[in-house]
Length: 127
Ligand code: FES
Image (cartoon, rainbow, N blue to C red; front, side, top):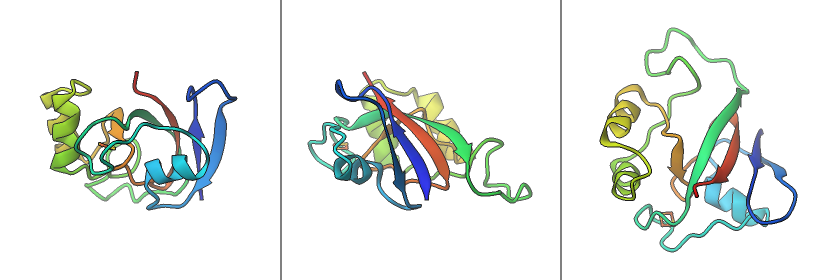
């Protein structure tokens, strides 16, 4: 289980919840009463964009594995998510290239496409 801390969504106090590796961030939010806009739930509309920051790595990594970035676990973002983030101006093409090349997440993610990894995260609204 990892911590997911939602900060800045609505007027209520920030909320910390627990999630399992592989859970989709949007579903974690919805099941815990956090309202994130979500029109398509398919990585196309960009309405669910959020800022995601890793705040701890809860599982030791194999430092000899090349796919792992120097900070945090490898995160595979598919082309659809990256293209949507570029088209809405949330990331640059260069940031998308770096994300793909080094398996790093971008600082803005689509909650409907963001699978929880073995790391606690802080989630804030995109705007
Ligand atoms: S709900 Fe449309 S991109 Fe996530």
